[in-house]
Length: 317
Picture 1 (cartoon, rainbow, N blue to C red):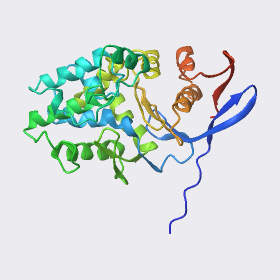
Picture 2: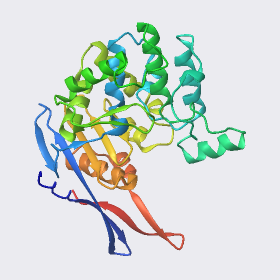
Picture 3: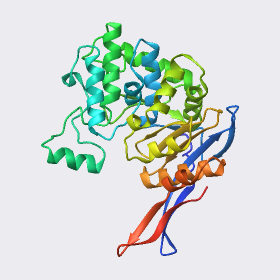
């Protein structure tokens, strides 16, 4: 039997009233401008499931196969949206470009991701719906790509569907690695593994592109970060604070980010804690000399006791 993998190192501590009451383990990689590994914490070569970090690469495959959307809708196709009205309307608009409506979506019925948006949605009489699920923009883009190519729309999530085979080929090309694990994502779409190094490499390719489909995807993310996440999310704040950057978070504590100068980062929090993701991303950017006050603020995760701040989640990079 193969030897068990070494445990991931501690990348963040939960500090309450000066006492470390918990720890988050994980891995991080930083690529230099030339694409080589500059530094890493943990095993950056082991396969991970990047979850929604894969979406910009999936979108690239779609653009290469004829998907033609304005930048705001292409950004939504790369996104895990909050379920705000601009997102739901955007997904409908993508579908309408090819004569479809939300009944064609194969996303599971869900509530909007953002808590305040969800509360407003419920107060307005909204119910769990495929459109409200955070991946509906990506699925709408997948359906539009199918229509453009004359591919079946009912089976677009099948791993053997021409769309998914095209995405696989693009994913392998950009990560520079074979897919070790093929799983199913929370939205029902095929989920491909890569290493953190491979993930950072893929984002770097998009970020440095000067033309073509890669540049279209990168520019869509740059121009409309609110469509990639939401108007109140830390993802948007980080991208707005780093002109030219592209980035995407994923479930289970994943995040990838790249700059137009070729530097790129990817991380995975072992227990999937989003609070650690935020802290570790900001610390990685700080270690690289990239972080500013806005980025550092997104990485501040306060702990409260008795209605006041008594601690923090502190990265240990």
